Length: 194
Image 1: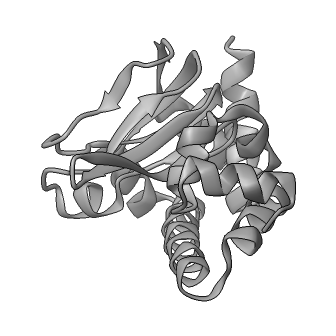
Image 2: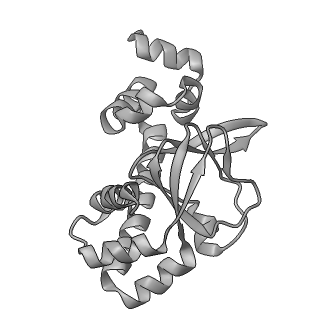
């Protein structure tokens, strides 16, 4: 019995669709494939077609892309979060959004095809899948709005308020990149100068 699997499904479902039945949770448990990754290991590479969503059981994962030969952090995922390259997964086309373990990780790969088949048979799995997509879209919109309307200090404060685990655990260079600021600006923001 994989206790971490049960905890991971519990956390993931709680954040997306808390009223999901135990039976539906067990269906998801039966679909996932456990995998361990070492810090620094690439989980998704450039040009890969994403065929899985990844549920983080333990550790932290960063999604990023390259722009002007610099890597830019797009998203962080930690315990109970889902890693997904939305466009690649939905369209089954190669991605330019990469993912790496920034801590040693225990991950649960949820095959996209198996999820769709389960969603056709179970209304609860269908709702869970929809909630994942909705959450992903809302998160992307909030991030874009932050870039457009918030100061560097406001972006950092929101990250601290909504995701303190990222601020506590992720390398500062990745946090700065995620917030679209230089490491020097992030240092000034953290020191309260800005």
